[in-house]
Length: 250
Image 1 (cartoon, rainbow, N blue to C red):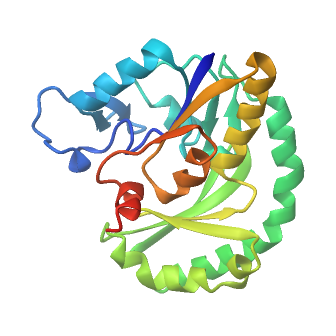
Image 2: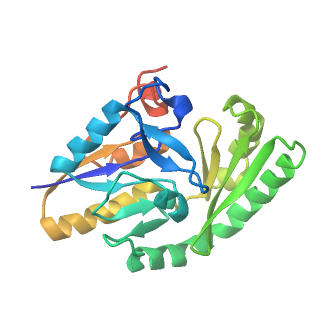
């Protein structure tokens, strides 16, 4: 039986130095860099062992919010199966090319969500214009605007609370065309069609067609990972992460 693991990257397989349990540990290995080549994400000894274990018996499918450029700045990891990027908006084939079937599906569906997304994004920009500590950006990749995200200069989730309160009650969210996700100093606002679980379900159907019955695992750290983990036979959640704390009632 073929074994697949759908694997989130940031805060599951590596994280920034600030989030490492021991930033002085000489065993830390660089796993991702900034555009200028500066290392900014590291794998602990346990995470390195975990990656080695996955590589021994699983077909590994990364599932990440990273865009193409940020994904290509992940180093020390080699993926030989399909790859899900842009929160599920894009699927790459085994050779790193765009999956044409999935891209066509997105191209047809995404414009239906643009009116709702454009309304909420205009209001977000107006809100952020009143305080220069907010930094609102659109996630654009491959010539397409996929979603938007906002960070705060203070670097904390609490600093985004006022903006989040507005987002939660916005008609675009209430109508179901747009959803939000927050984890640390990152508030993302996405069209409903863009979701990791949609891309995972698409690949699961493909793998079942190719191999018959398969055994699937999911690994992820945040609440937004929970829906794709629920599609898998087993779920792996790193200790102390957002999703782990939620399940533990913390």
